[in-house]
Length: 254
Image 1 (cartoon, helix red, strand yellow):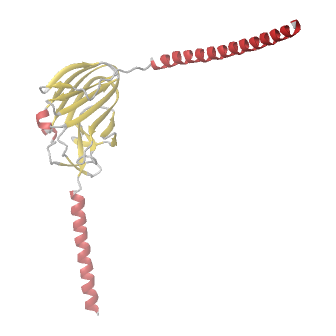
Image 2 (tube, helix red, strand yellow):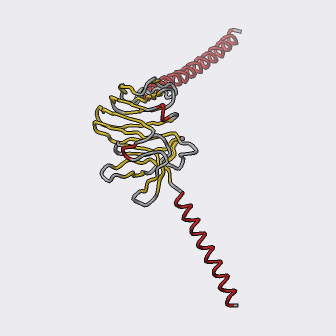
């Protein structure tokens, strides 16, 4: 009987030992999982702590009741100014910016314009927005011929003159694309040659966008198809006359 009891006791001790080993192994596995999760959390927190840029919500603009405002825009921020509850001007910059804005919103109406600036060191900028630019001959409905002989018409009703003191690396101009201006191109006024010069323009995220290397007087010009239509009409008329003359000539020969 004593031997049987000893055997049973030995078996029970054996199972207890195995169970303890399993518990220890599971605890080690759990510890490894918890430790790995902890390190992943630390790594994620470290990565997300870099390159944090404070961006103001463009849908929460700074309302400007008048035509002008003098303000400062901190580096790596974007601010939208809404003039007279009509014209929106959004400025984003990677450097500190002292900004003077002047906007004739009553004449311009509802427009959504944005400028993105990259520079070195603090910048001083003056930006003036108008419906027309008479001193450079920019009037609604006027037509202009470029050096490549392409003709453009001014219909946008928005022209911006930008002056910047400091070192500008590059910039982007953007204006909301509509059914009326979707085929338009950004153009600047070349004072030396006294002419408007168009630049490559694309539609990105619903905005007519151009990469620029300098600031001056900028606007959107539309291709003028009137000359093309007139040319096609004249060409078609001439072709028709040639065909009619040929028919009469053939009949006369017969």
